[in-house]
Length: 189
Image: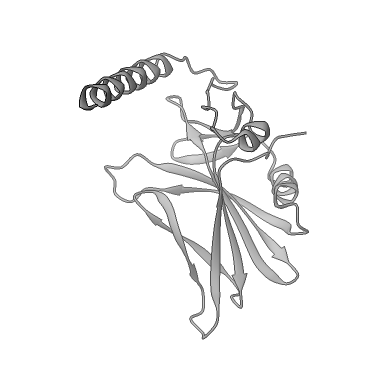
């Protein structure tokens, strides 16, 4: 019994090492880079997700400044469509997050707007390439803020990742709820 466990563990480790080694050999281009998302064992999830993710370059960093390649109004329209619940997005930004100067900077595409007078926001992490291009990938997660009694909510970061939220004013009953979705259809037609 123990030998079977050790053999299965060794085979799983070897498979993972081969998979990781194969994925690191992919080339990066300006138009997009190949990615493979592993199928989930859940058949419903598998039906909704694409087997191969798509990426689109939306910006580049030049001299520490973000230059948009996709119009901000188009990004706002796509955020509104991505929310899909009547939220009207009227502001988009690309936010650089870097906890310490030693850390690699992470960039988030953020859309902010309102739903029935309540503040809403969505952040999607961008992938950066060696030439400082910023790509939005369809398998990137979406971090969605929904305010309850707050006029403005903030994303909280730890080690360059979104880990929670904060409410601008600290009054009783006011809060910001965070929902995380595993992928996005930001550039789906």
